[in-house]
Length: 171
Image (cartoon, rainbow, N blue to C red; front, side, top):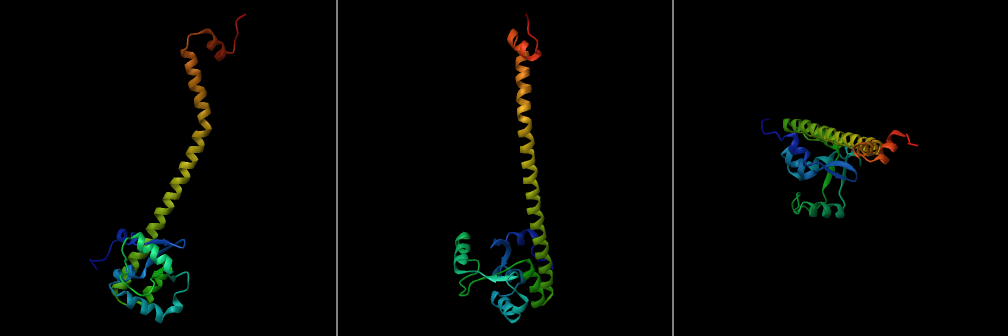
């Protein structure tokens, strides 16, 4: 399977719709090297395997929004609204699509979903650490300003600033 598509290419085809990471039926058909119509026929024959959290059909508005987002239709001139599959739905596709290619593509897609999850997790961790750093710097910024102020007062030779730093007054 030397011509298998890389995980990086697959991750570019993962979309976020309705708050879920999904893949279009047409993109999956390309990866599996089958026609979109055939993929959807197999899904229709095994519809009980694809509950709403595994697969759903886009609304006309979602389809138009997606089409305008990519400037051209990635699903061609199809008359039916596209279906999208979550990670679980893609895993279930391996049970309805047969062949060596289906198995290998499924493995790659699962790896892509895992990689995407890891990337998102890393970004969340980085954002949290940045927030913590901002809070820490914010807490210390007043102390740092006081240190700089004290240094400037030490550098100023006038008598008034010396009295402020030392706390002693001359009588």
